[in-house]
Structures are given as C-alpha cells and as structure tokens.
Length: 252
Ligand SMILES: [Zn+2]
Image (cartoon, rainbow, N blue to C red; front, top):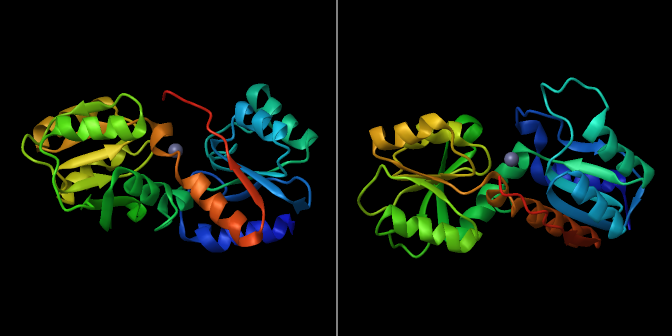
C-alpha cells in the first residue's frame, strides 16, 4: 500500500509532464482515498471504465484520456456529472497523462505501438517531437501498402483505412498514436514512405496521393491501448501495488 502522493510522484517522475504543452491537466485529476493498494488502467476515463474499476475494487484509475480538456465549458452536468459522481462516491483517484504518456521512450503509446508492430524507432519528428520514425526490427521492408495494411489488421485486430501514396516497397515508416493525422505533413517532410496513426481526416487522403506517402488509420483507441497498461504496470511493480488493465472496446 502507498499514499496517493507517492503514487503521483512515481507517475510524475517517470512521465515528466512539465516538459509538455498539453490540452489538459496531467497528473491527479480527481482526488480519492489517501491510500492506494490496487490500480486499474484504461485508455479513457469513460463511465464504463469507472464502473469496471469500482467492480474491481480499485483505489485509483490511470488513463490516457482524462476528464478535463481545454475548451470544455466547465459545467458538471450530464456525462461529466455521472463520471465524477461515481469516482467521488467510491473515493477513487483519477490519474490522467496525455502527451507525456504518448511520448515516454519505452513505455509510452508510441514506443509500445512500435514494439507491438515489430518496428524499431530511430528518430522523432513533428511538434514536441511526438512522432516516431523507424523501420522493421527485422530489417525487412513491407512489399506493398497492402502488405502493411494486412500486418496492421492482424496485430491490432480491426479494419484499417489505407490510402496508397507510395507504390513501391515500404521501409521508412513514421507513426504517431491517436488523433495525429495533423502530423502527416511533418512525416512527409521527415522522409517517411508510410505514416501510421489512429484517425484520418479528409485532407490526408489527398496529401498521400499527391506526396507519394501512404497513410494508414488504425483507430484512435486501438493505437493507444498499450501505453497506459505499460506505465501503470511498471509503477505498480515498482511500488508493490496490484494492477489490472481493463479494455473498453471502441470502434473509433
Ligand atoms: Zn488519444
């Protein structure tokens, strides 16, 4: 058992949130009980995740997408009321780390997605250096965009949106988890032949075709499933806590 403050310090020293300009507060977002024995991790602090954490008798929840974002109007009504009411009624702390969780060099979303896909990172690109560049860990190339799509589909177990731009073999791959379609132009400038992220918007299909770089959208949730359990599991291990990752499926 550790104090909530010790747990916060462990997350903060691992993820160093002070290094990022983010869209919401990182760290302890909702204060629960002072002593923590059991952590549940998940991608998003949704009502389903909070209910699952309650059923698992968690003292703290660790997520990538917390409750508070820039641009919200600040009212505690509707879904916000229900999520907060559940956390407060059960005295469960909510820890949320957004960009710092994407970026951690070994345990973050990008590092973990790369590992899952068999990619070795060799450099970074884009705003706040959040994008990763690399190649297959086995040194081989994907023979085509279709071959890379099939690989992504098999590993992530979901349909992939593919727009071909590069029609030869694909060796240099850029990736950035979540809603990072806005990183595509930086990936093109960095010399990638393919870019993998969670979401696609309308302009990226044209950039892919016009710039000769293929685009793969794997799902925001699917691309960000691996950082939270890696970080929460690491910290739980370090502090002797119980940890459980709960997957709440999301097709988006
Ligand atoms: Zn995200």
